[in-house]
Structures are given as C-alpha cells and as structure tokens.
Length: 507
Ligand code: UN1
Image (tube, rainbow, N blue to C red):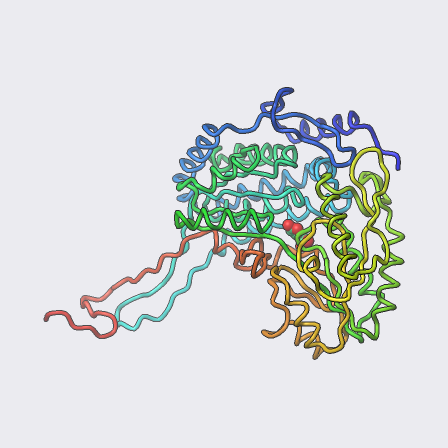
C-alpha cells in the first residue's frame, strides 16, 4: 500500500481549517494535545488543551448566554441553526476532508457524515416551530391544565472519534432550537474537525446576531470531560463513548442529580432467516460489518444465521470481505480505511485470539495490511460454536462472529443475550418472522430493522439503545424532549377555588 506523506495531509487539513474560518488560536508546537491522522499515524499539529480555568469560563459564558437565549422565540432560534446548516453545506467538502484526515473514514462516508449534520439542522429548524406541549382536560370547572416545554440550560456534549461531528450536530442543533447553549468536548483524537465546526457555528451566530456564548469548544482528554460532568451549571451531559466512560459519567451526574443522555457501546446482530434474500442480505451485512472499519457504535458484530443457509451466507460474506479494498481512505476505490490507533489493532488481535481459544474458526481476514504507517486490517469473519464471552463484548474493530440457529425463538434469545442493546436487524421475507422480531418479545434494542443492516440510521428517528448502551435517545422523533424541561400549568379562570380530588378544606 502506498500512502501519502503526512506533510501533504497536514497541508490539506490546514487548507480545510482555513476555509472554514478556524482561528489560529489553538495550534502550539509545544502543545500537549496531538492531532494525528490515522492514515499514516503521523502528527497533523499540536494544540493547547483547555485549562481548568478556561473550562470553567466556558461554562460561565454558556450559562450567561443561556439566560438570554432562552427568551428568544424558538423559531428565531431556528434561524441560527438554519444558518449553520447553510454553512455546513457550503463547507461540506472541507469538513469531509477533515473527517477523513482525522477519523480515517473513506470519502463517501465522510461526506455522509457531513450530510447527516445538514439533515439534522433542517430537522431542527422545522422542530423550532413544533415544540408542542399538550392540553389535558381538567377535572375542575373553569380550569385549564396544560404543559409547556422550556429551555433546560447548558448542555455538555462529549463526543467520540468515530462520528466526530455528526453526533455533536444531533445534540447541538436540537439543543440550540430548544433554547439551550452548548459546551462541546470532542474526542481528543479528532480536535481539528471540532475546531472547524466551532468556527462555522461562531460565524452563524455572528450572522444572525445570536450571543457568542451559545457554543463553546473545550479541548482535552478525560479531565476536561470530568470537569464538565461535575459542574452544577451543566444541566444535561450528553455523552457518547464506551460503557466504562458512560458508567463513570452516569454515576457522577447522578451524584449531583443532574441529567444525562448516554450513547454507549453496541454489540449489534443481524438474524438471517431461511427465507432471506441473500443478495440483499450480503450487501447489508458487508456494509454494516466492514464499513468504517467496524468502528461505528452500530457496526454489525454478530451474525445469527439459520443453519440451512449458514454455509452459503458465510461463503458469500467471506468472498465479499476478500474483495474489499483496504487502504488509503482518500482513494476513490477504497472501502475500508485505517483503524484509529494501535490500541484498536491490539484489541482486535486479542479478541481473535480469544475467539480461537473458544473454538472459533477464522474464515477470512483478521490480518494486518502492511502500510508503513497507519493500522490497516482486513475485516475478519469468525465462525463460533457458541456465544462465548468474547462475542458478548464490543470490540471496536471489524470482526464479525457467526452463530447458527434452528428456531426463531432460539435466534432471538441468542440475539438478546448480550449486555448491550443498540441496533439489530433481521433479513427475512416472511412477514410473521419480521413482525415477531419487532415485537415486545423480539429484539430488545433501541433500533430494530428489517432487511437492512444495523448501521447507517437516518436522522429522522430517535437514535439510541437499551441496557448497557445507556438508554439515551438523540436526533429525530421526540428526542428533543431530553433537552427541555416540562412545566405543568393549571390555570383557574373561574371565581371559585375547587380543590382537586374533591378535597374540602374549611368553608
Ligand atoms: C455512532 O456510531 O456513534 O447509524 C453513531 C449510524 C450513524 C450514526 C452512528 N448514522 O450508523
């Protein structure tokens, strides 16, 4: 594999940042935060992490801005997000280039990620006129009972490297129309994409006359996030990442009785039924398992195949895996880019070793593709005799474990017998089976699909999952409610004072 040199990648990143109007206030040759590209493993630039005092100031700014922003009518708040959407559209290729350079995504997926941001802005603008509360019939004459949704406060968004900007936008576009302000701590692995988005949002705020403090960016590793998590001025912590991180965040936020929204690990499975359209299933399986080098929360990690179609499915998936071009994500015909870092490769080999020790057979892949730079691997397909401990864990790399089943009940039991509950799918042309999979006693995940893979959700639905995935919902549907507080209002427009439940008190 011939990789470009890091210098040319750095030039490209600098050009994209400049085009987005990113101010030159972060780069620092001595800085402790290193922005690398997984394409070569080389250093793009060094940055200064945000100090603890600056983090506190950022929260103070966001809180001040909130006190003003919450009284701006929601449709006017929508104008800020509309402008952000325009700027994201204008800078789509710059942002996608940064996503590729920092997260290693192939160009089509990087553009898709930016499109996801544009789509969610459009959704949020519409939402800015639809933050509906209900009116309920009061049990008392001359009374009105209703609810009003009010802005919540400062939202801390802690995002992960694998969707360095889309997940930020789901949270931020919604939070802003809901009247909240945002302090964003991106993954320390993808600071440059964050700097570019922050610059565009700052410009959008200037263009529409919104307070600058509606959005603040803070850079750094764990301690920066911990400070946000513990700050009582932060009303909602929306965190995406590992179960370990989410458990720590959940406990700390609970300690101060704050709110949190968690998007943690997945261990997503697809059931392949005897009636499945295998041409379609194989395409769906390959994209979900190998796309983004297996580094999506929604990546397909387990295949639960009916024994009657197991050999054929395995053969076809293996043959598709073997044809996937692994390499430089900037090249047009590459489908699998690099892993984010060495640690991911170590986790992948450790998982494959465990799987073999448990009696698993490696059908194909799992090999390092020599690059002289980043960590490139061929997606692995492993046939397992049972759902052993390693299959029940999330390994953030392209490994697809295959299990077989005889009855749908058995498939669903295997499917649900993992600690995570994010995304799932069934490939079947039998309506009874499809409906059973979607029913209360079917998949226990937050996302359950029929005849598509587990990854690549649209923004219009609520995104999130159950069990160790954390229970949060972001993006579409009524996920906006997490970013607002509900007030129940009873208005008495009579000249009497009847008490509820018929209670009499005095005369
Ligand atoms: C994630 O992996 O953190 O459904 C989010 C998908 C994307 C979002 C994934 N729209 O795969």
